[in-house]
Length: 252
Ligand SMILES: [Zn+2]
Image (tube, rainbow, N blue to C red; front, side):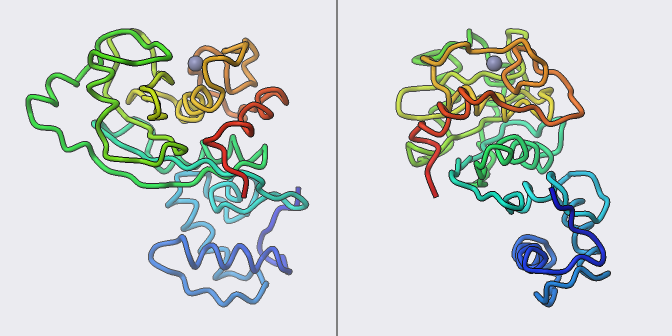
């Protein structure tokens, strides 16, 4: 894996400069000259701060994933688009949730795209009712507070996934990948780790018919417990194959 840092040159640096000009706010207006100088390094650090990832001014795997630039010698073959709907802000900053979700899937050539984000704008009575999501997380949600929540958030294309952020569940879980028919979605609790969203999205992509649902290797994203990890969790080849066969994982 080539790290790009101060002094690097070449077409990959041009790609980094172009993405920084598109994605960093305020716009850095870097000249896209393929020379990684001090202005580019400063823009990389600003982008890392904006994305909630480690700030070192070096373009490595995490920064590449957050910028949506594939690893050297590889390309993104698929994309998954996520729409975020919140009752509650997560304990982990939103940018960190998004960048770590991107990082997990980028390892496997899948680009996670931000589709849209909005608050559910509940009335005080609705807020009180959905303060805690009562009921049981199941694959097929048809009624109760889960359904009450999952039918909100406006229309989203049926091959894109809505991620709902809530305060808590009545069960001791940090997330639920179950959803209503033809409305792919998952729910993540405020207390979820920075990997929780990637895990619940994975449930949606794998669907209920894939086994094993969970894997007791802590290095796998689908470990059953939402644990804090320092290294980016991965996926097995079988999981990747199944995910790429999903209608929600679109070839690009
Ligand atoms: Zn799970």
